[in-house]
Image (tube, rainbow, N blue to C red; front, side):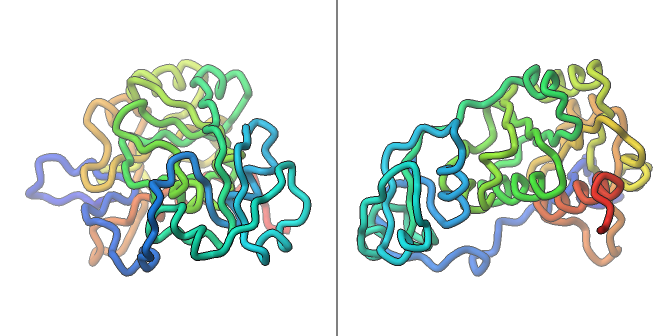
Length: 272
């Protein structure tokens, strides 16, 4: 969530838009991968969660001998493969942990589906484009009870193996809806009784105050760098901010999402 800057015309960078690309050192070291990864999921958590999801149509499971032994019984028999051969089936840099699964993509829900299911906490993403950020947001959403994620049909990445790996299995449990117009989706959520809170540096209230005691909540996060678009910000019931030290202008959007989900869920998941 970017802070206000007095010389900027539009500083509606919410939750995390820091305007800079993910540092290269944060990414896995590249290998000589040869595949494009289309249709593949990889990594222990992503693969085991997909195998456990009855809504997934499974096509092929590849595993190294050790990974197959760790996996145990599965609803599809693995093809045993050497690790170097698995490297060549997947994109360069894919950290597969000895497992890869080719599966049909999950069918997205509609926004009406999320509302009708009674999902009380929803995250709306306004053109968040980095697949690693999207996957991390899925993971935090699952951890803090945000069971629905709303994305635009355009200007949002598909749920690829990169997203699924970063999500650590959460793409199987958090329902995804794609909409044409984010601002209209927020109006629809408001009509259904959701309090819509956009994260932005110029928000007048702190996030903790904006979400306190809210039974039905939609938190709205903007794109990396540019933040919430003006029409989307206007469609929110209110804008809120995450207080941060003045030395830092913003947070990465996935980090800000985790903070926002935590603040909204503190009363829902009391400490044991």
